[in-house]
Length: 133
Length: 133
Image (cartoon, rainbow over all chains, first blue to last red; front, side, top):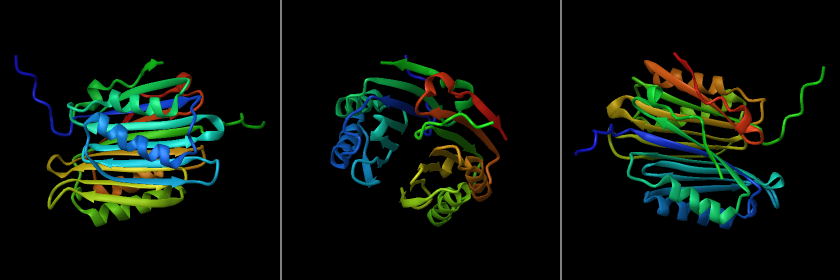
């Protein structure tokens, strides 16, 4: 049975709020984590940008992908990070990317939401929390 | 009456799917649009990165902000763009940023979702479509 045709801009956007993390002020760790997450997803890294707000303070990082992006914003003083993994197409493994991030930052809990993007997104949106691990 | 205290990593993430757009292969227009959107929101631009996939093809752009980020991924062949505007705190105007983008790209329709991020996000998430304009 052939799969249904998928529009080329059919995408998934995984939003994850990570609580009780470590390593959130470590720019080198976060940069390597973004690289590893992109690779784990099977995505193509185009560029990576990081900004550290100061010693002991948060890091903002974005990996630009051929498939869209992975971004993270961290608040080490609260052990909190906001992650989003956005990839067009259906052939990439967003969960594997999240797994890399979870291994790097060791969160105590993760609240995940999967948002359908692109054509037909209005009808098929899954925007409720899909898991707390 | 004093407002309730707001955690410093309390944020809003506006996801917008824009259909029927023009200008989606115009890197200069998209870069200026991201700069103007950040300014309209009252945000502080840290860095901006754009990638063009080729003549007539899509553009990926990310504005790194002190307050988080604005990103756009465009598919000019479908008149479609995926935009997200993510800002921590409550003092910035995400709708003004979206207005700048809508003015630049002239979409025929916009599907918007507002996602609450950060502490308490699980309980207060508003992830249903909030408007089609």
